[in-house]
Image (cartoon, rainbow, N blue to C red; front, side, top):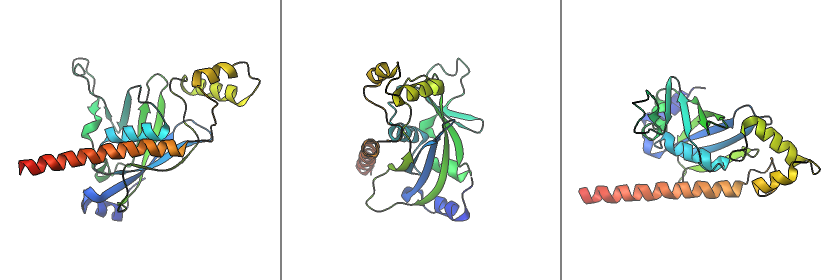
Length: 217
C-alpha cells in the first residue's frame, strides 16, 4: 500500500495538524480480528504500541516489537549492545517519518511467548477534526485473545470451551478468565475509555512542554 500524492503533500505541508488512519489486524485469525485507530503523525511507535494495547484490550504485560524492513523497534535495555541486540527505541521513530519514506505496512508483535503478530497498515493521512482528541478508536471487529491464553492453539481451545455449555473445560476457563467470553463483543466503550486516557496523557504532555518552552523564552 502506498500513500498517494495528496497524502505526501499533506505530510510535508504541516505535520502538527495531520493524523494517520491505521488498521491493525491480528494475523492467522479467522474470522479476522482487527481495529482501526487514528493517531497524530507526530506520535511515535511507542504511542502506537500503547494505542494497540488499548484497542485490543491487552494489558501491556509483555514486550513488543515493530519489524519495519530490516529494522526492529521496541524497548531498549542497558545491556542490549553487549548482547548484540539490534532493537531500536520505539519512542524515537515517528509515524510521520515512516510515511515520508513511503512505509505504510509493517508488523507488530506482542508477547513473544504467545507471539501475537499484527499487520499494521497506514491507510490514510488526513487533517485533524477540530475539537477531536487523539489518539482515538474508529472501528473494529471480533474480540482479541485474553492475555496469556497460550497463543493461537490456546486461544482456539479457549474459544471452543467457552462456546459449548457442556464442555468439560468451560467452568475452569470462565474461572480463569473471570467471566463468559463473547468473541463478537469488542467492548467499544471500554476501548474508547482507554483511548481517551491515552489522549489525555498526550494533551497533558503537550501542555507541560508548552509551559516549559514559554518559561525558557
